[in-house]
Image (cartoon, rainbow, N blue to C red):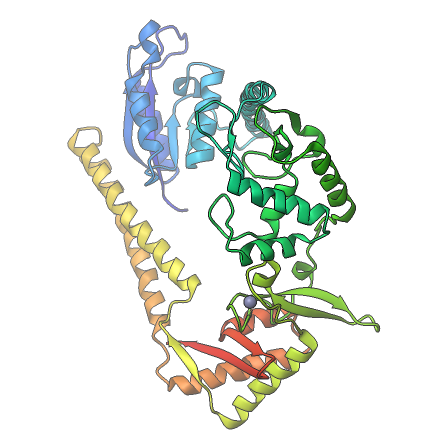
Length: 493
Ligand SMILES: [Zn+2]
């Protein structure tokens, strides 16, 4: 059983019939800790506090402050009874859920074991539900306040392209040169039938920038097209604050605003009509369900961005991927550099085969630092560092006379054992990292051979093939114009 760390909390209530003394409470906490492999780092007390002073509870406040610390000093707070921890249901729920959800600290009553029986889990469920109820009520109030503001035509967000705020709390005013861009977007889209892509590319070719000072993308044009601010309306409650998810249209609040219009309401209406008629929801992206084994590895020869794939179907029903530059789809690259996986697969396999036959390979030697092992090492080191803090805390408890010498020694021994086990884990990791001292070119060819075998086999999924390739290949650049295929191999030292 792994060691847990805890604070103890003792409180004496002056009007409780069942009261037991602070010493007896402490005895019960220590007894429980010893039986459950828990190290009590410190016991906090609030004695003899009653009436109005009870609001303060300095011991309790100090303990909560420490328990919420970033170094996660304790896993649990031990109390004799839940009624010691909080003075009423509401306070208990607030603190318990805050400690559990945000800091992963459990409040444990040594005389009322909660989690072991069905009634316990029911109570926990109720706590969860209450918690939800409280946050819903809170956001409901916030929502109502903002809705009222919105309906009064107030301006809460920063204004979109075409406007600026001159005086806080007042409607924004038009920025003429930006307003010209906005008008161009609406007209090109609605009257000339240009696509979002084409409009973005057109604006970028003129060197124009969004309100964030960036080049235009497909979605920045799409966003502007749908924004009723431009015809003098204001819109609120379009997205969920926490997730940015776009809400259903009937939840939006659109009302007459106080800002001057940049385009006419008629133009805005016909724009919305064209948008509705041509808009196809993206839905599930086919590339995620049908991932090609070359996905993520192909780069554009012109701009270096990744080529993304669209799933295609041949007449005979066979699926394949058509790769093209992601930058092009965003209006940021001049050429699509499209290529079918049917062509590319053959080229890549032939090229690897040639390398294996000639044993002539160019590759980059990288420091040995695969993410998994790197993280593991980091995690163990962090554990070791936190032990030092824990040692200091039990030492302090001993010095302050809270723990006896025996208790201190016992706690110290437990921590020392943990330290040794972490150090052993670190040693084994290091050993594993240094086992091969063969010629790197041989290791590289060996790896290429085994990945090639995976690629030509039918036993592996595309995802597995893709993962295998990513162990040895950084990127692949196919330049159709010059008919050249470059594969960039790498090997961890
Ligand atoms: Zn490109």
